[in-house]
Image 1: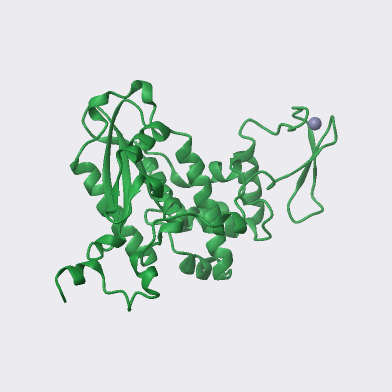
Image 2: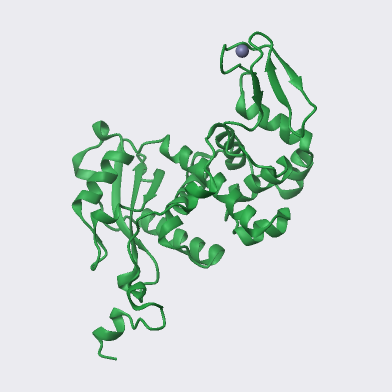
Length: 309
Ligand SMILES: [Zn+2]
């Protein structure tokens, strides 16, 4: 039987104190007990004079911090806030950075950064799994269909079970080089790259490489668009991939019947930190057409000029 998701009260009862979060993060980092990263010893002393404990190896004296090597590395935010953020991002519809900041009482910038660090752990989880068996891939789009030359083309792929239900889903933004920019159409190289990067090629039958309008995948894309638009008022091309990963991460947890929150804590405890400069570094994306015109209001849109308006 699938356990119902944890309620807010249950979460606060279990993770409302810094000490509870310290032990939960410790357990997530070392599920079979502490191991020194240098010598492998399981014996350690705990140094509790700092805000967060340090663990000193009893054999080689190497000191290990609780958060170094996790997505929390370098953060001064309390663990209770971090755990609440992980809980909120693991719930059905996730949360926007504005709302997260209000709830955990941090600035917008801190909330935005925390949410993206948690998303980067979800991205690690996504990269860990390849599509295998009966795989179908389809092209889809994100964006306002009125502005068809501003759409973001995406590829959705899924492994299907014998009942023809998707069991693992991935949605990826193709490389801009793999798209005919003016038509916003993905070239065969884009589909091929998805096939090579996201699937276990050896077990993939050729015939199912490309499928059009699978009803289950069409429904997933519909839910994705509604989520991006309602929760965040839409997402631009630069950060879109991390939101796609967050969406499929939760969806895949739900299909498996796993606890998204417990899994998120596990991935945050085992994934490397992503820094603000890394997050905001230049990333090549498809240009939106109004950029060439200086502003959206000056841009008239291909759909308007086409009809001679
Ligand atoms: Zn050691």
